[in-house]
Image 1 (cartoon, helix red, strand yellow):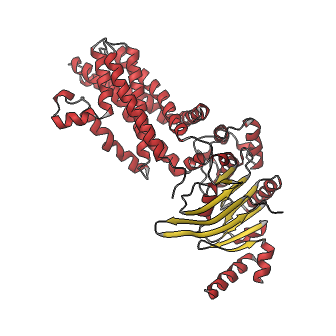
Image 2: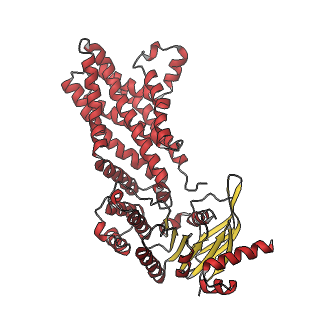
Image 3: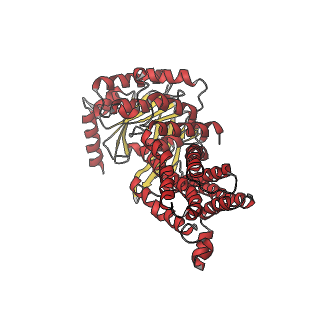
Length: 241
Length: 244
């Protein structure tokens, strides 16, 4: 059964004179939901609206039954931006301890150990973040988002530029988290990551082209892979208008 | 607002500073070196040093903390950590006060050193209590921090942030009574000087060096503290949880 974790209704976001999102309706449930589309299509803006850091012109975003960005959600939504958003001049452990204090996590020590193990950084916990590789830095950022076991995890392109082995491990982690009850919303511009999601939102130019399981999307478009399905959907829409 | 979060921020900022040994060394040693240079320049006329020295003890912590804070908070804005913190249960004032507390600690260390060298080694004449000199210096540093936090909202790059130094700090140094006594300034400039916070900071230091009474010092300090509160309040208003 799909319970709604995120409900977006009539969402419009304007940047300058250009509407990045206009009158968007999306419902996101449990499991791992992939938000796929080319860069610049409004993925990050939609994710920012869900987290509640985006200035919104119109519409409503409800997360776990509360308005997005409202006080009760600040403990319950984990967010990883495209930039690592951690302190480069602190060690991995110091970063996690600091964010755990800000989140007021009761048993911080255990929780920090848990998230370090989850992102496989336990052996580098005393390294200063600036000395880590790009992939390790983004895993530190992910570890911060996992603190306190959030009900919703919002990840903006977390697997960009990562080693395929690591990418596979991260997707396995996302599914483990989803099994434990954290809804995961993850964006990507790499179409081959689509197959790893329970549910897919295909996005282009601020609109949702498709919203279904990967299998159903491929079947509906009569395509063998998501990339072809995406193209078919874009062309069908072009023919319709 | 939560004191726990404020302290967490302060501790984090201090840990970052501790890791940056070069910055820390410069923060602590530069004021001492500069005040020694000044004493050396006026070797032949120690009365000038006695007049200018206390003013500089107010100006150094203010200027240095202004620069350090505006650059560090700008970095926090541009690296995405500020956005992340504001998406967490972090009060805006907790964030600002955390920075203010951390830099006040640094300023206290800096001022204790600078005051000790000025009074102990360089024979700066101070009529009032020497410990109060340090208190004034710490409040001045917090003033620099508050203004630095505020201007970081109006700068897109660190390069722009540094330009706020000549724009906001140097005029205050020129008008605070260091070069020409505040009473001897042309009317309009005297009026401008009356609404600038650094003028009161320098007045407090000058009072301390000349007289043993402390009532005026506390009055001046109260004015500076008022500017600190206003700066932090305006700074909090520039922190937005939602951005475009």
